[in-house]
Amino acid sequence: MSVSYRQPGVVLTDRRFTVPLDHADPTGETIELYAREAVAGDKADQDLPWLVYLQGGPGFGANRFIGRPAWLGRALKEYRVLLLDQRGTGASTPANRQTLPLRGGPAEQADYLTHFRADSIVRDCEAIRPQVTGGAPWTVLGQSFGGFCTVAYLSLAPEGLSAALITGGLPSLDAHADDVYRAAYPRIERKVVAHYARYPQDVERARRIADHLLTHDVVLPNGYRLTVEAFQSLGIMLGGSEGSHRLHFLLEDAFVRTPNGHELSDAFQEQAQGLLSYAGHPLYALVHEAIYGQDSRPTDWSAERVRAEFPRFDAAKALAGDEPLLFTGESVHPWMFDCDPALRPLRETADLLAARTDWTPLYDPARLAVNEVPAAAAVYHDDMYVDTAHALATARTVRGLRTWVTDEFEHDGVRAGGPRVLDRLLALARDEV
Image 1 (cartoon, helix red, strand yellow):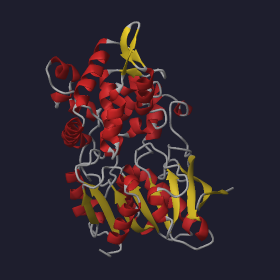
Image 2: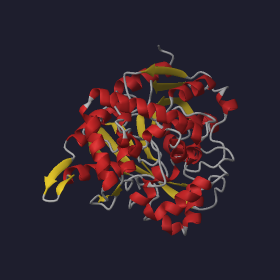
Image 3: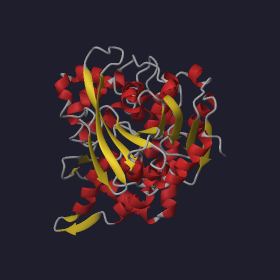
Image 4: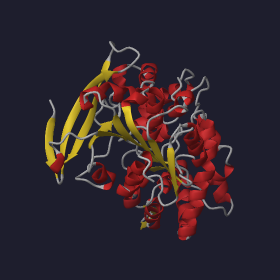
């Protein structure tokens, strides 16, 4: 039964759907999906076209908006919006250390998680679309990994789309995970260099924290083991519009003087554990590299292996000389499953996924080459999370796709730029600019 309620300027309705776990076996096991319908309060009784929003990730549920902020306010001027929790996230049959043991052991858990990639998410959308729109096609807005899903949608079921809008999420169609990370580490280094240029005092602050972690065993209040590699991974913030500033504020008062000497402050540790913990989105860690799996090669902890090709990221070597500490980000490593209590029970499951060789293709270049769905994509110049060269190569493959390449925003442009970003994409898709 659907339940509706109001927030300022918007009417919300909780929607739940039942879909097959494996869309190749429609009569087999099912899972439940959750989505929140949003419509402008003064348009609640109108017959409006639908826009389905696919969140970035993988592993994050849809935004829990209050009212009509960011891009949502612009969308509600002409659409009913469906904020979908993709399978395994939010309230859609969540997959985590508490629920996955219901599947059995690590092997059974890994088999289960093979059904949580972009192709299954697209099939979910197509399964619920008739119930939502009465069969009419809808517009999809895909942010980051949601954009990966949108390209898969154009490959697998373009008949379900009236338009495709992508923000910071054009994937390479054929790159192995190794190719993705070989392109990523130099981008990350550029972001770190830019951060230190803005906040030169952070060079010494970061080195001091790293040195402390190399010589002390630090366990955060939630049980997370804060190693120097974990500290470096806080660089994931540098891909967002406010990330450099947030990292600076985290570093500026990291230590307090105690009877035992200087220690990392409770305030620093509290913030760090909130930034590092995967308790709220464990699926990100479990299937992050699997979203690039499409051939007979295993991903095999790609980010960890490729990092060794970039020795400047080695903290001990940086501290032994006078080099600044390089942060990392947008990568998952096996040590995370040792450090994070939310991931520790899932280490063997993650190893099995990393070794898997039977990933199926996610994209269809031949079908994309004859695409007829109006499509537009925002490509953020030097995006830390998605390689610009890979994105533009894909854009050239999708017939009719129009791109807006900008350095005005970082990867979170759809949040930071909100209405302007969505306005631009709609105008491009409608051939109005």
